[in-house]
Length: 531
Image (tube, rainbow, N blue to C red; front, side, top):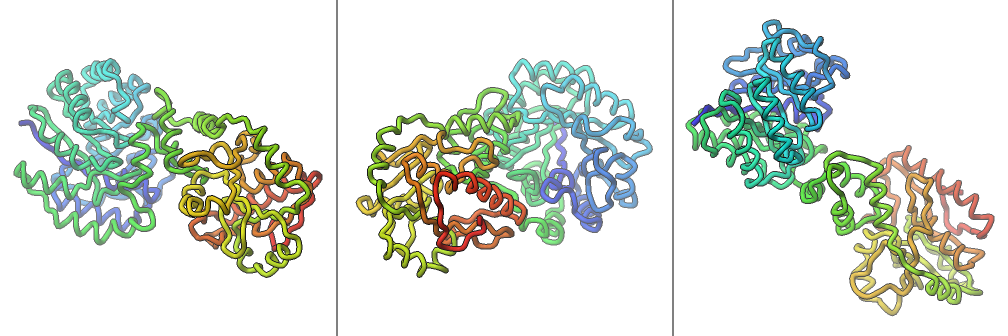
């Protein structure tokens, strides 16, 4: 059995949580506890010449700055490591190893940059460092690409080649597949490492699997204190160390990790909170970049089912190479479910012909000014249409549904009152069973030039225009207030807007209303920030 080494990368990967702003006292305290715990290698941060030096942050422009933060501390047995994302730190910023506090440097790179990145590794090796080649998103490598990487590595002879499960996609079968490719073809003096992420809750289990492989070469596993790290977090180093103590005769001092959790790490756990959750599960289960998930969730219009279906349409290299324009196109294609809505438009024209119309939004003024609304209804007997919600304060004739997520929230109520509430739905909203009374083509109601192309209020006004309604009363369209203040009558409908975002939304709606009022007369009977 070859040598087993444990590497802690809390101060580097954990920095994604807090922009590497641990504070100098925490940097020193974490470093000293890791040394006293007996960790074999400690990764102290990123080398990135785009960032200015800050003694409180573990992201540094050059090797001299590493010494400024950690230089007075005792390394003892630990190998001190820095990391470079290839292309972010010029070789001129790296002093020779004998002049540096660092003993080793890890270089992360995507597969299409392997030739250039490995040449950079060779330059670092000439400076005297132990050099690690870190294969970003290792699960994206085809076998031929991996064999080409191995060919280059055998020429450069890095200290180790590490499988980096960037998006937490690995299970034991593909971990073993990539391990076998590396183990059978790398020169015996090159170690093999593994860096886990926890999107599938597999980080710790995969580390155990990695350590169980039969080989005479050095094996290296990464972990972070309490799993602190990017996205779903990493394999918790305290668990790996415990396993190594129990099964491989190591003597890591677990109490030091626990003290660090209590004294240093919990300060950052809230509100950042890393670890397994549905967001990262969706990304991992679709083998895709997490930014695609966040983009779709930020739409605030999609059910989880819809998000999953759109992610399932991602193809090829684009799945892990994030492209905002690509996901926007898939979103529009998914939302633009083609329907022939001529008959439904005609049906609505007949139903609304000659009637006054009251459109009701979900703002707080529904409750605050309910007497005004009730008085208007009693006097005018209008058709009442609510937007993506049902008011408790008065009866509603129609509900306009343009948002799959809102439909999920309303599904139970709608199933209990099928005769009382008629539904006008846009074609992106799919009923759980059967059909809605009216379904309108989604794409005809969008504002393609807007940041939010499917504002439900604007879409409903466009529906009124299409069915020939020339005058509407408006209630509950309050506008948005930022900084987590309540915007909606139903707290379950709330979004998080800062003041700048809220003002931009209000301005957008106000500008559109100026145009629409030339075709539809509008009377706000409750207070609104739009006017």
